[in-house]
Length: 81
Image (cartoon, rainbow, N blue to C red):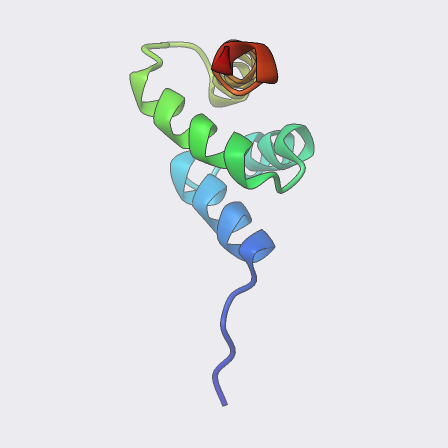
């Protein structure tokens, strides 16, 4: 019997893949994103655009900060006006 992955599981597996199986970085991303679909989508898009030679956990924090800035700029009621 096969079961479908939940949205939460898909987000977490996607983050694991994105961080090249770095479980510390993945755990950090999960803690920040809190299984929010919009934040996950933004995180994935911004991850590939982030040119960073630092460690993966630092990149997670940097990308998450950009996610929050993007949400504030584009995904609030004032942005629609």
